Image (tube, rainbow, N blue to C red):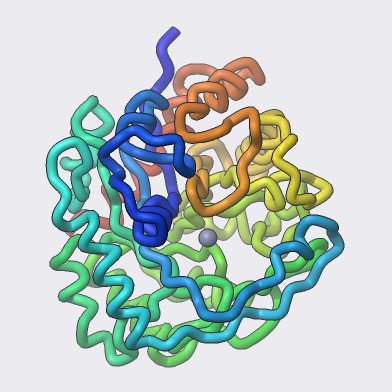
Length: 342
Ligand code: ZN
């Protein structure tokens, strides 16, 4: 039985290549994702995040042994972020051939049908956008089709969720005036709005204000793993109520019920989050959001070539072909068709 092609909600391959060099087009052993391995894993398209790391060093060691509560990261300099983000985006904007930036639903459909590997240009943190939004249309012209207002830190638009286990994202202020204007502008232009990494007030404000579907590109179920980055049942239902989807992420401290940073994490934990999300929000709102190249992922998955093992595990858990297609790509396609319709 063949497996459906996958649209994936989040990867950090651009950051890996920007930091360590190399090419996304050649097969390597580095990280989780390059084009040859992606093709081998049945990946049709993915959200390629442009993420500018800060200068402060989070003590990720704390995550190895929950409970943990990390201080919120400091803001990044917006000018530096803009320069760095432009360089990372250029890795995609210039790419053609086997890796191709996706600007329309039709282009995305061609990727699912076996075309090039599609790259959806996504900002993880809106720091490169001027607070007066004067360069937003320029970014749209270059191919930007999805924005997460924040990473887990404050910026001109909103504030992020601190990393805690067990714990909630309920700390800090909601959207700023610029943040509200950015939500409205994304609706006008047709840019997807991502609530992953937002704190609770910001998430609620985006859900209230957005006109179309809202997505969580890489977040799991808080009821299964009570990490602050995961979404509570009311939040999962609220994203679904917009028509959006939640991309289940493979990041192990967000998968494992015990929250440990331990890659000896079974694919069964991915299946649990999928099941919980399907039960609370409905199968039409379940998608994948791996965090390849951005997180520690289960050894059983390994890298992007492990995607078929995830789909096989879902099939073995009782998901039929219709459900598998929805989870693998149809739900993302439906949402992006609607968001990008203009
Ligand atoms: Zn992230």
